[in-house]
Length: 132
Image 1 (cartoon, rainbow, N blue to C red):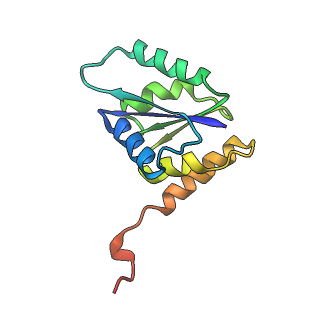
Image 2: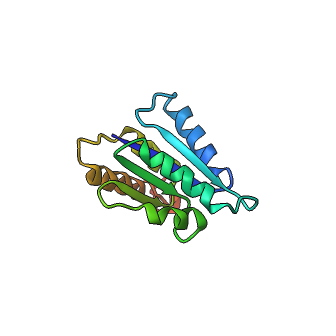
């Protein structure tokens, strides 16, 4: 079992969490936590404390961030621990939905690969489809 932490600029993390809860009708088998980064909050120690507290909740954790190289990603990277804490950038609704329903089966890394693979499959350009 792993928990999910979503860290984004602004309130995107809260909206993503709300969307996932709505789609899954609040039947989540994972705990989802959020941290919003805004321009008024430059207290990185506060963010670090919140991330540390989140990581205590479970042996395996996935931190989702909105974009690699941004503040959410940069404050998360020090917590990466192969096999225990993974960080995935480019968070979106399909990715979170898969993370909420994927079976862990005691193989955390395999679950992470399934989540990322599923997300890549959900990037679709309508112009590439044969729509009549």
